[in-house]
Length: 138
Image (cartoon, rainbow, N blue to C red; front, side):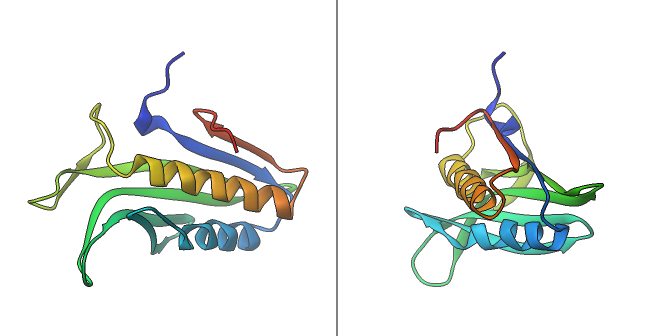
């Protein structure tokens, strides 16, 4: 089965509290990958929103992808799952459109975020179940 890039996600089940897992999800975004950065945009209930942006000169940023991580409680801890929601089709116009079959700009930064999150979760809870689709080596 082939996974399209826009279907890439992380699925986490942990015995941590949902607050600790949500804090870890946000803290993992503090990293930059090359010329790309991931910025925490804020919460919307159990949804935590993020933007992948191209680092430019000065304060201007070009956001090329938006994704969310839904963190929720389970009987024995917490669970979380990421999902790419939008990408910028035409960066010059700044229009954000729903995802489609095109190559996703900022995808390597998103995958690096998923790897960093997996590493952080497993360090805090070695018994956690963490799956990245498509599977990405640590």
